[in-house]
Image (cartoon, rainbow, N blue to C red; front, top):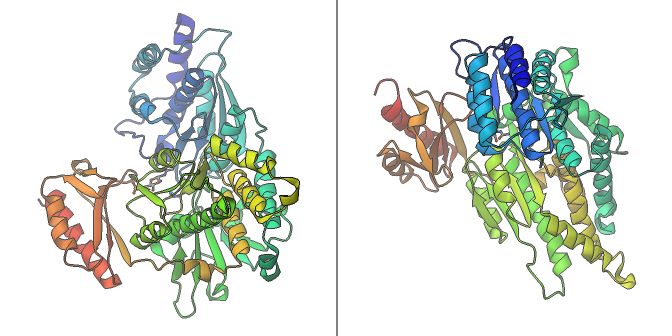
Length: 556
Ligand code: 16G
Ligand code: MG
């Protein structure tokens, strides 16, 4: 870094000092805090994004959002060149940047890091480019300005404001840009609406005859996802959707609405009532990277039947397996495509059993999209989902090429055969489902297309398997980092003795399963328990929460 660059950075960062007394932490998917604390963090993440762009010689994305958190919070997620999340080996640097106490220290940190990473700043040659977007939070505009200032303080770096977008839209655009493809919002809508149409056109005639696209109601979390879905639906004729998203009419983002609320509380979101009994409904979260379905049953007050990420994963797996079976029919090169699924310990045990029953390879990873994504990427077709509705389907480049080659190779007499249609369906899925990151909008269209293909109602879909009763609790402890887990968070290796105590409890319940883990987003320890009956799952969770309190609570 030369003197001129150094003095620009020193000057600019003098207006962005971190809030005194607050330790900022990168967390599972980026920084998230009360919006009033974040200006300096955004400025510094702007700098980080510019350096990442220089290092990778690619376009980088920066999304200003706090997802399902309350409206007064905000945060930042960074998209790497592939469209995935920021490489994990840069997370410690992000942490030290955010917490650096003053401009001198900050510039020294940058200098050292750039030397270590071999990042050169040559005036006139800088080609860093960062795409910026934000969700609908009122603090977004102010934080965008701080981010822009950060980017501009790296000489020659360019910030492009893409406006208000969903998180997956931005990730999609970053990936498209780096692949040299068209990458506007319109291109995004065009790609997913045309591939949805292709899937519908490929429904076998028998299925199509009985197809009824009965009404779907969407809870848009009063946020950006509902707005974008509205634009998308306009591009798809004959899709009967009602979107409830009252953000512009006074409804508060994520307040008693949205995927997180619905999945955790298992109750109807605001604006839904008994008039909606039996109808297929879906909830997005505040930045539309999470999706869950649900329906309301008669006589259950405001309780819902949740159709979660595990059920979406199962539906997608079943559909893709069916297509592969058709493709391999009278073929000796069976099992060329390695299809695998990735879940976390939160996946309902019944879903894992079902996927194994389908003959699939099931891998568990720790909680957090970055871990699941990485594993799914190792398969030819990898499907990953967290129970909470984060997930997507990844197709390797080789698989897409293989499908394209097969499609071209069909002799004239078998054009339009079921086999070719199966190939085309998988190609359409690879375009419809966001390859960069889990995306509620594209996930929703894939669910809708598959339900139509199967001729299934949400009830039929929900019957794929029956969830084991489960219970989640959280426990406040002195220091949650005292818990160290292994085997994808299924075992607590520290503090010593705690896992034995948990095992003793679990052994008391038929089909009992329980694990604890420190939250990556809140200062709590989470407890998850499963058993054959609801009361048993409740009891198991309660006794394990007591164990956690005994080992780590304030009274121990
Ligand atoms: C973040 C993660 C989500 C995970 C959740 C767990 C991303 C994009 N988001 O929201 O995948 O399920 O954290 O929260 O990775 P917890 O650690 O508080 O339980
Ligand atoms: Mg989200």
